[in-house]
Amino acid sequence: MSVLDLEAGPILAQLAPGMILSAIYVVGVSVYLGLKERKRLGIVDISMEACKVEMSEEELSWKRPKMLIPNLILTIVVIAALIMGLASSAILFGVGTAIALVMNYPDQKCREA
Image (cartoon, rainbow, N blue to C red; front, side):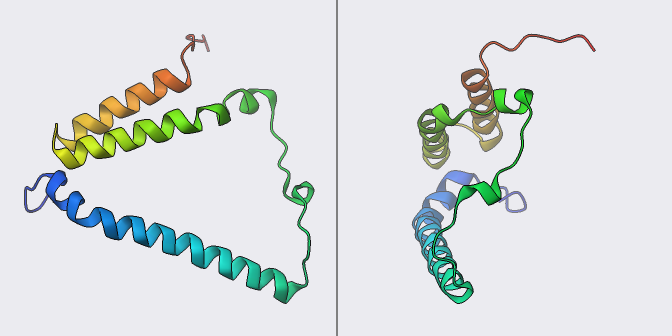
């Protein structure tokens, strides 16, 4: 797109169905291969205790599991605006990033080093 000096909207609109189908395909193949590998190794039940990672209190404070749906909606809105050609991709991604930061971390204060 940069070399040909084209806008992202028309190109992304043509590629979107293929991107969606390929994402679904990748998830399906991953599940299939994961189940096949479990069977090969003889693993019946996987507990998350073996995969547990120790995190500090500060690292835990940065997690935002309750913001999954709002972030997904914001992502869909930015991609739709990109496809419709409402603004250039740099502006849309910049505004989307700013909104995501304010939405996910609303009360950050400056800390002195």
